[in-house]
Length: 405
Ligand SMILES: [Zn+2]
Image (cartoon, rainbow, N blue to C red):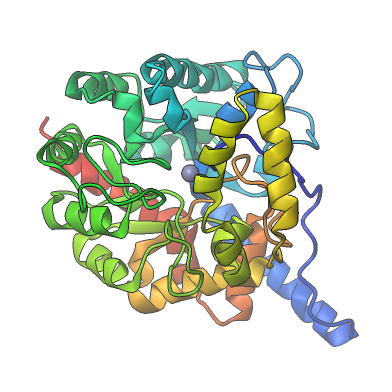
């Protein structure tokens, strides 16, 4: 999720991955597409981050009145027909609330409301979704042909400096906590704020260890590289980055640097690649480096939400960058495979939390294009299965094994 609401420019159908107009190339592409579909039938996608719950709040539709997602919804990235087309079998739904809610003292309340949205999403469409709390739940729900739905909390501000609140969020179903969002906390530095602690404070270490004790995944997306390193020094269970890409390819501060990728190998964790053009395309990363700071400054300048939105949109318009395409995202996947290993990469699209996605990755129906691109580049079935979801399930199970029962 970006720092603030953004207008969606959602593509409606993912473009076909056609590299040539010759007949032979066309039939090879059709062949790859069929192979990709076969892989997806075998192993559905497990995505680390989808912001539909906050998108619904922005659109003031927390009760699925305006947006019946059993039907195609052109101004969302996510609806049931496209989840099915994309072969999604498990999804971490983000219970994101803005970092500034900590200052107004409303972070915990808003987080509870967003958790409520996710539970109601599942209850509203019981033929499609079922709540999952464990790796076994994910496997069972997939067998039933439904989409396993898990809750991820995006930002440590949601616990309001309280381990009791953390434990209660776990009790309500949350299975990961991203340690920070766009701003530093009293106990951890964010990637997009001025370093204050150089990583975690002693209380920050306690948060990580309490999450390990509970069996809740520690999410290092959005945190500073020093916070990532600090977490990896002390964590007792594998960590995730629920929606982060590779810094070596696109220099945005919230991407993961190579030394951390190598630490993730030792830790056994998984980096789930974010699709946002502003994080995966090099020019995008350069243009969006300051986006969280710009958002904060504009919010101060324009307290009225509509004025803020206009100014924010104008800033973005003045700072354009290319969208990239499915190959750009696969470049990040390959870099993480090369640096951390095939067991340490997954997918964390950030759909419905991002304003621009690469071509051929317009929405949740497009995951098979990643599979197709990986096949085209010579990756084998077993490797692709790990990237699509196998690694994510393994890490969830490993975190459960560390938990005190
Ligand atoms: Zn995010």
